Image 1 (cartoon, one colour):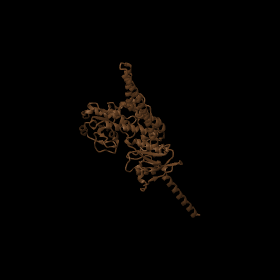
Image 2 (spheres, helix red, strand yellow; image 1 turned 135 degrees about the horizontal axis):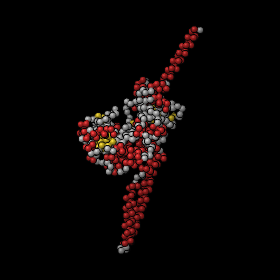
Image 3 (cartoon, helix red, strand yellow; image 1 turned 90 degrees about the horizontal axis):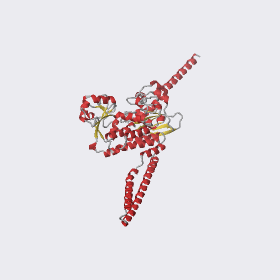
Image 4 (tube, rainbow, N blue to C red; image 1 turned 135 degrees about the vertical axis):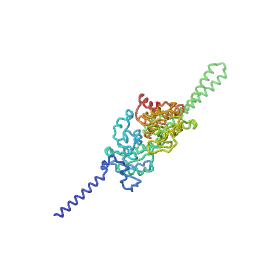
Amino acid sequence: MRKKSTLSLSIRAALSFFLLAALLLSPLSLCSVKAQSPEKAVENLAPNLEKATISLPAQGAALRKFTDSVGREVSLPTVLKKVAPSGPLAQIVLYTAVPDKLVGVARPFGKAAAGYIDKKVLELPEFGQFYGKNANLNMEALLKAAPNVIIDIGEKKKTINEDMDKLQEQLGIPCVFIEASLETLPQTYEKLAELFGESFTAEMSESLVSENHEKAEASDASDAAAVSENAEKSAEAKDQGEKDQNSEESKEKEAKQSEEAVEKEESKDAKDSPELADILARAKETNHFYALAVEAKTILDRAKAANEEIPEDKRVKVYWAMGDKGGNTNARESFQSQALQLLPVVNVADIEANSKGGGSEVSMEQILNWDPDFILVDNPELLAFMQKDSSWQSLRAIKEERAYLVPSVPYGFLSDPPSVNRLMGLDWLGKLLYPEAKAYDFKIEDQLKNFYQHFYHIELSEDQIAEVLNLQTK
């Protein structure tokens, strides 16, 4: 009996051990490392996680395959109802496209966002950043929210495949990467449409383009017919005039018809291209992602047109002042300075880019040597310092009051973070630097209202427009 009892205790001990081990290795055990960086956590994973395809169960939902921007094939629920951003850049893109599907934010919206961002989104839990040098993931909050997918959006890093695979393996939640730079945002929205099962492929694009071209052609045909009709009438009037040279009525009629023909011909150019508002209205009805892609492309095309319009010898020199005393800046080739790269301006900071954040450091001597035409200032406190400091006061841009605060409600127009918000920055800065350019023949207030409506889902009041644009006052 003693041997049997001893054997029974051994079996119970073994079972207890395996149950404890299973519990510790389950996804719920991740809650115990609430603030642990995924970069540190993945160091404890097996090194042989090189997988081309990851297929995680999706809690009873029907699955489908999605191939992300780096070729990783991920199993996802057919319908995505809950998503989490990997960081601030992804957070803004997802807010513009699918605000109702966000279950949390990577970084809380600032105080300035109140009144500009949906209140429901402002109250979402904070997950922190999922990886990188600022990783501060709150796994307990993440697991409680139970997103269908984690979406990383931004610059493609060399280790992105490995990063996504390890993060996915660690969390037990599908993770996808969608590439995005300022210049490729239209394609980013196309990829998001595919991710959320609302793809607009060539068929939709060609249909809308064809429809608008047909309208333009019909307008052209109508104008041509009118011109022809007026020409015939003019000819008839001319013949009549030859028969009766003394008829003042005939001469007046001929002049009027000729004038109408010229006016019709001059108005033809305005009808060659369909109005953006019409395209956006049609796109909005068909597919919200398409509307955002169209708007992004329109702004980017405007910047390209400005580059063609402004010759190199007429382009202004710009310095972007950051940090406590303005000695930090985003270098010419940095990811954060892409807005300046796409505009016809010369970023004087032709120096090595600092990829760690905070910009590259430069000396006051170097800034004085550059002597920029315009200075873009990161925050009000810095501008106040620059206007009192003797070294900064010796610069032409300060003397001639050409130092401007970069608008930042609810996000910075040129960066902070380097996301969709920079599209508005292209129009703002282009209009500021080249107010007479044909490419920027619009009222900045109108464009601001249009952008916030489409991307931030808000109808700006006159007071809000003033609040945002007053940030650029000297």
